[in-house]
Image 1 (cartoon, rainbow, N blue to C red):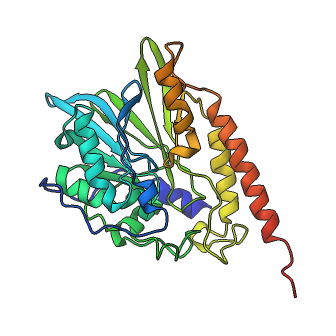
Image 2: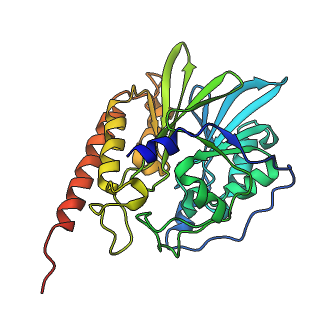
Length: 312
């Protein structure tokens, strides 16, 4: 996969600078789960400089990265649905921050339920938007590529295109304020899936935070994870996903967050955090390896189904 590796070594490249303005959400998206995903939720501090500011069913994380040029410097990860943008904007304010201080917006993967609000949030803040190189065209067009496992879903899995973009290679880093972020290309759920890590401290304890992209083998009807993909020099989506699962299993885990809060036990951990001073349940070093085991088992089941002969 030499051509692909060369592609991923592309340096950080700025595509332009957006102008800030009032938040003007794009038209709301419709799906069977959209209303449930977009239920309002009170923002709260997860650990250190990481705040949960998304709706109840779609993670959006605000990182208080320190100061830059004498002003607060914030980084936002994921924008939910188009109709999530006003809720995220309001939650950032409730948490005591100003959305105008968002310097960078990041994304886990280019699907309508995690990238839908990014265009509006970028227009309102003038923030840089950084994505993985394999996700660049999806963000430019607002459409997922045909080798995305969920191409054609819900419908088309499209979202408002983002005009001003920067790319970062696998393992690439950038710094905002006093916080350095690392992109980990973790393909499988989508071709451009990205996980983001940074270190932060809370009450004398320092830990790595990993906003890990989903590794669930979810696909539109007819998609086969075992089939070779030309865009990946003939590697199958399953092969790429195995590598991503191995990364997750070996990561020096402190706090693990996923784009859907159900995958990191938000509903269970939040009451525990409020009910005890014994510790922060989101600080759980074993979560990465445990999640990798679950995703590996799910992929095994999916591949077993793909090799079952259909009835004649």
